[in-house]
Amino acid sequence: MFQRILVANRGEIALRVIRACRDLGVEVAVVYSEADRDAPYLRLADRAVCIGPGPAGQSYLYPPRIIAAAEGVEADAIHPGYGFLSENAAFAQMCRDNGFEFIGPPAEAMNRLGNKDRAKAVAREANVPTVPGSDGLVTSDDQALAFARKVGYPVLIKAAAGGGGRGMRQAWDDAGLVTGLAAAKAEAEAAFKDGSVFLEKYLERPRHVEVQLLGDRHGNVVHLYERDCSLQRRHQKLVEESPAPNLPAEVRDAMCAAAVRLAKAAGYYSAGTCEFLVDRDHKFYFIEVNARIQVEHPVTELVTGVDLIREQIRVAAGEELRFGQEEIKHRGAAIEVRVNAEDPAKDFRPSPGTITTWRPPGGPGVRFDSHVVTGYKVPPNYDSMVGKLLVHQPTRAEAFAAMRRALREFVVEGVHTTLPLHRQIFDDPEFAAGRVDTTYIEREFLPRLGK
Image (tube, rainbow, N blue to C red):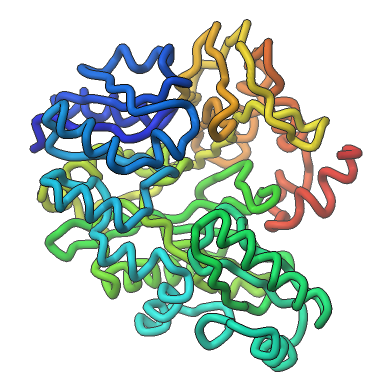
């Protein structure tokens, strides 16, 4: 096991990794930017190292400063959390080249799966269904138009190196395809320094279901069942739950088995997520792999009892998985909502500022992961998430009741949050019945609220 780990992230996930290190008896250091200098969780680490000013490009996204911090604290390994450099294969290799274990998958697997077009090729080799798409990257309008006329509109333009909905456009006709192609390339170039795109047939009103994976360096890969994250706005997840409602058991089993096949074909180890779209006939299609721990990993922890961060660290240290597939059981229903410092009444405008009152809920079956306390200043520099509220109960109906209770108890003052929106979501009969898809929030729910 490692002696000392450097956490190369901030906020809730930094605190989560600090706690896992404490549980394992590992010393822990954490980096921070000037904008996070007063963050309370820094005091829980053995060391805290400032790596630059507030802008992420000069701190959390600046690899030389991360490496220098690891050298300064004499770390054995670097945990990247999620976001920032967590899926950057070059950074993973840089860590290892400098003598630090990267707590994540090998750079080779990240390269195979980090680019969506290459990942689809791996999926096809592993006999995993994929959405009908272009034959490789699209480099001209004529090539794009030929594909669209072959499969029929609508089609989806996707950045090969993209994520979070950036570099993604829907096209419903020839004119929209040409303009959307140029816009997607420009956005992808600005966001990822890679303007390459490809096309897929656009599936109307699909569900988004992902399978949690965990593998070790010895060739063992298991799944930890699925999470449904169909409730989204602008491709950003709002609510996640497990098990996925109204998903036939045979479809769940086939999807989980497909995810394991793909991970093995890519030589993948560590935690990761294989993401699928599921159409109205329950046919599933691979879309991408998230080669990192995800925001919603606690949902899986609640229904399986497996601490994914601890297992990530153990795997990175060379240990074998401590359980086989048959030992992983799914228990009850878990739901997570992301609490963001945003104002839903003003088109989800970020709401940085000082939190004057912070009273999160508690009680049976409630878990709350957050780095925030009363008096915390939400900085304008980063993602607006301030916490993750989770519930775990024997049934989905009981989990809904517990979430409604928890949302009513939660009090935040000083900044706007998405809590009022979540209270309305959990009173929505369509969501309660599991009749939602990735476009439901924007297509039907928000318009009813006048937003």
